[in-house]
Image (cartoon, rainbow, N blue to C red; front, side, top):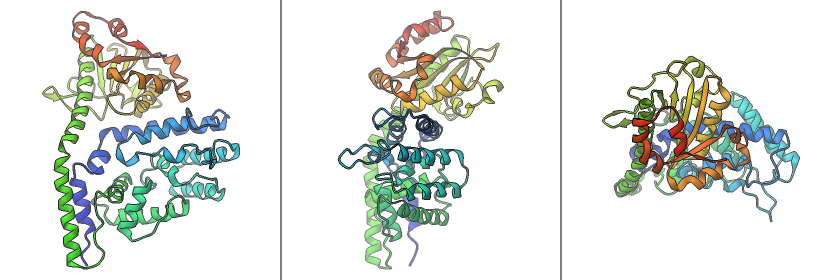
Length: 423
């Protein structure tokens, strides 16, 4: 029987509405890895010092899991497994200090280790404790620490794996997850030329099969079954054409983000600053050229070699004083993406380098997101933010005043004037 899985994968890769193009190739996805790692470190620190608390709501865990759940369709609902179910008393990491510490130890080992064997040993150790309700949903945290050997996990991914492999993996058990993981690694290796070392790619494929977007290829050499399956692929391609308008709206959203970055780029240059554009945004098309045109090709060594520099390179816009090379202002544009990740990058800048003379850390967002911004900054995980005086600039203020500031302004005074204090 011919192997039809490569045909499925190729169709999936080319599908503009599939997870490969809408999530795996999404530029913002990669920005989340470091911020989620930082968030997991915060969870560990709070558990170790007894500050984690006894509730999911308002905890650092809710902040991290919430930022994962915001990442488009594949992680939608990722927080369900961590929500406290009072009648069942699960997951039992909020009321039992010993279980909470065991959970913290698992995360701490996985943050610090580099090998697959260490992660698996940590999983077997916590599995042996049989903590009620704490199952392989945790793998979604571990994926962002070790994306090359820990696949993401949810019901649709399990269903997709079972459909493609003929297995019968069940939800809720670590041993079932680890068996599925072995099968995923084997499948990923077999079709590595069509997938990726990052297991998010095959996770997205399994998600799209398990959620019903694609039908698994027939395992029997039956011409009728194959014809029906190929007809189903044709149906998906036709449906993809129908969702083009939705995808166009998402691209328009990305373009708006780029446009606001362009405003900040041009304003900074007009005020006499050197400008750094986020490393992964410099090649974006803007105003007939590239967003990075006329901007710094590399950060000053005092910034680029400092702790947290990988995250600082991803801050949307930095204004840098030309004579001294010190960072004067930093801007994160939060059009639709998680505000959490931008705040983490601000923290890395403020706490990780001395090469700054910061006069402003700014979150720039649509006018109707001010409540979201304030809600994020009120989380216990961001208690350090109060000292940093992060400010909010609504799109409307920047749109209305940027040309006048560029023409008549100097320094940061006018920018401060159109911003709002958040804490």
